[in-house]
Length: 217
Ligand code: ACK
Image (tube, rainbow, N blue to C red; front, side, top):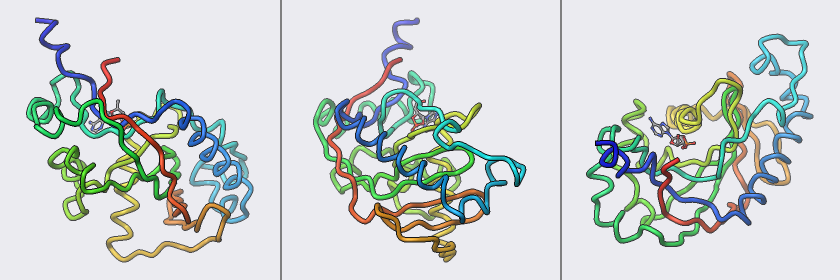
């Protein structure tokens, strides 16, 4: 019945405390603002607009998507494969409601999404489901590679895309594509991977408290 269907959440994940959400959003906005003004970005503007001469305001281009979080398991109220075993996992049950410190190690931008890469600790990996990387077709990346926070999506783009965009960039790196080093920014080093894919590796990771919980919606 409907009650049973509601017994599993839409997804499990780490939810950033509201006080740090603002800080992370500001950092991301500052990055977009700076990226927008770079000659190197303007040179590749057509990745975003489809037309070289058009302008783009990145802060308008991306829309925020709800509360900032790092999804561990997308359950779709139990309809997603592996949802039930995940919810019943010992670590998931024991650590539900606990506080964690997430380390954001990079920011990335594509014509579809803007996000932050989350570098998981061994303990945090206990909460990582069996194979979200493989589900996305990335069979040879380390577990946890998909961990991210969606900071914004372009019009008509769903947030599930953010993790896929991250995996795409990490796959390029793994294949030995170093990307084009663009410049050293205050926050870290900026690299271009073609097709509108930008990666800012943070000099100092952003550490942010987050609660492991679930979202029903
Ligand atoms: O930004 P996200 O990680 O991408 O957070 C949202 C959250 O679940 C609620 O929609 C993520 N999400 C949606 N569909 C999937 C999926 N098929 N696999 C993994 N994560 C998903 C989305």
